[in-house]
Length: 335
Image 1 (tube, rainbow, N blue to C red):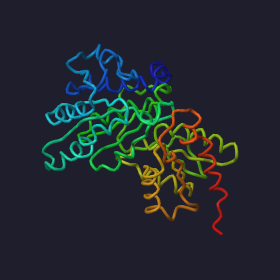
Image 2: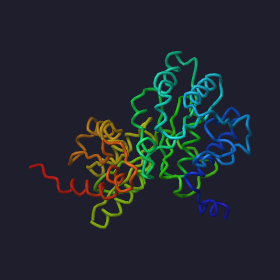
Image 3: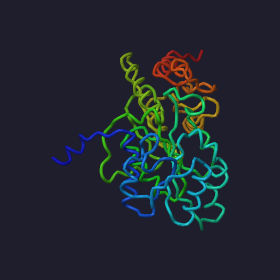
Image 4: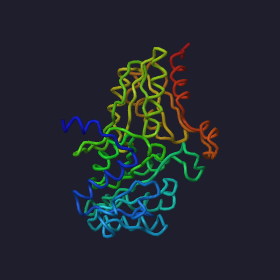
């Protein structure tokens, strides 16, 4: 009966962030948190609620409004054996501490021949869809994807938040953990008490036979909704949730394409330089013989995100855009 009750428990994505951190702080006393207003205030998105009350000021540190100070302190602490979980309030603000993220943190372990590790997690609220405007709505996974030495995580469900947070905090390499603002209020089954999801393990969210939809974080529910629309038209779409960009589970994508022969990548990053281009390149290089149609990408337009809801929807991927991309593949002719 206890197992049945556990299976019925539901948790919000927002609460799952705090739960994932809490579990690791209880398990390992070297885990600390730092960031703006993450203490008694519980974080601007309420993703650290309860941590300060349980662990106190010794392990939950409120910082000044300085991204460089937050990440610099986290780097120094990590190099001395602490496992910091640092919050950058909006992912757009990673640009403020980019020197640490691109030039320092990911290179220490390599440049010291493994003598010094930087086991830290940088959490950040990512993505659009809420009308926050051009400087607070960007999906910036592709910025970090260009930097060797970083692991990149972007969960789509509450249970994945908890399981991936465990692996991220335990990693001896630096991890950027992208939490999507548009998913904070979403609900799903709670994680099991011992949930740990290995980094680089994609999930098949829906099985299908006609086309593979590869998505990440906020675009996963979009891809699933598009699959519902297409199913009503007799098109069976398989939906892959990457969960991580580094490590990237290319095998699961290629195995899916082997079943469907068609690939549509659904990403929130701008089309130019988006992570979907990397996925498309891998499939073209390693699975070209599996394809019977061109690879398609549904991505955000290459423009700053507008404030207005209607304009924002014009720029970002939508269910209709994904479904239409699949229909156009169905109608594609080689002659």
